[in-house]
Length: 490
Image 1: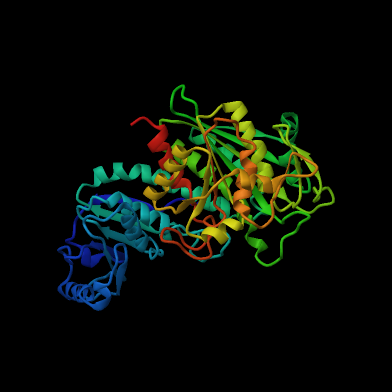
Image 2: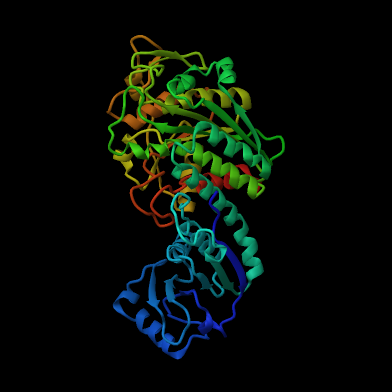
């Protein structure tokens, strides 16, 4: 897997700044105070840049760059604006400004006594992500060409301890991004399950349920989605027990490793992006990795349904009726509304086996949520106000956009079937809401539950503040924060 850039924390020493041959980034405030050790010509150029129209217009986290500064061996000097009382999000953005330009050079970061230094380091790590395993590059076998960062601060030992949990978060985010970025001919259901099974090495307990076991459990809705694929359907259960005898938080993820739409086949344009339809499962996997790496004091179980939706001669058809593990029957109106069939069975299994304190599912479920919220916010649905508020608060704290959308009986009527207990789509109107209403049919009474539709935020069309173009890993930081705030002892 892709690992975050190596960051070493050391005490501030500016006497040899002029000799550094890579990149140098200096965190500066509105007072434009610069560290000692800069050659006079460089200092004058930096002050002039900060006093320019562009310099005065710098927003928190933004940067100016001076190429090949006079009197220095460095190839670049980056001036990163960050006020002393900057927010965590602004500090991460400042780090991202550095991380986006790392390249292959050794970077030196001067943060002084900044209280937000750990967030700056996390921002560097998250934005420096690069998924290049399928690109041929002459230096790819040269370890000396891997980017590395030396982070200078007033108290490096304290900073290193503070940054430790952030490093675990970055590992989880990278794991999620890698999974979503992988092509479907590599990340098959079996390969996905193997990668999750390998996390037993970091302390998770992992079970892989195969098709025979799923059939015995009655997961006919999930199995129907994958019956047209050569890749066997699976459910993977990951457990982290760090919280004694407390009932666990259950995280459930949709893992459609490729979605053609099935018999209701999607248009060719853009179908290549349907490698990301396992994004919910990817987020659950990334969260579980983070919790294990930071040894979270909570009980959390992650369950993912892994299938492939293909238009084979054995594939399910529009008009088919399938029976869920719960026992409800579902009329399949559109085989491209398949993710909710997968989640229905896994949600029911999670409740009946683990009796969780709360359950949160994540899925790249509907294009409708993109129409409603664009690519800046995930859609949050919940039957429990406190759980919804906790998720929105966690997302806000971590700078990940989320917005609550409604549920209600009026929407429930849209998925009423003439032939079965329900149908799997209610049409175009309120598409993301009727999908959530469908899932709610598989939630027990009095079970706190939230559904997060991440279709718009998992793979946005352009780079974000903390991620290059491609998979963002949205949700790993939010759910890790949710665990910290609500399920770990204070």
